[in-house]
Image (cartoon, rainbow, N blue to C red):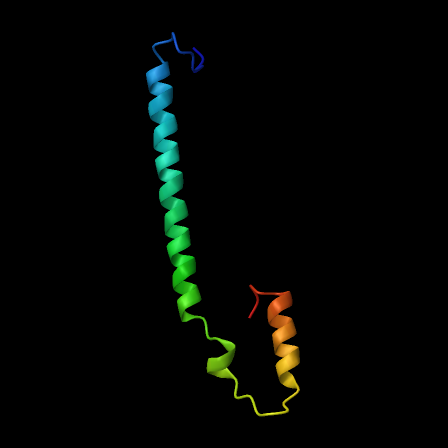
Length: 74
C-alpha cells in the first residue's frame, strides 16, 4: 500500500491533511525563530552604547569596517 496522492484516489484527502499539518508546523517554527531573532537584536548592544568615541580616535574606522564586513559577528 503506497501513499501516492492522486486526485481520484481516496487517499488524496489524507495527503492534503498531512501536507497542511506539515506546512502549519513549519510556519509556526519559522515565526518562533524570527521572534527569537528579533528579541536578540533588541538586546544586542550597539556601537554607540558600549564604546566611548573621542574625536580623532582611530579605533572608529576599525570597528566600523569590522561591523560592515561581518554584520552577524560581535
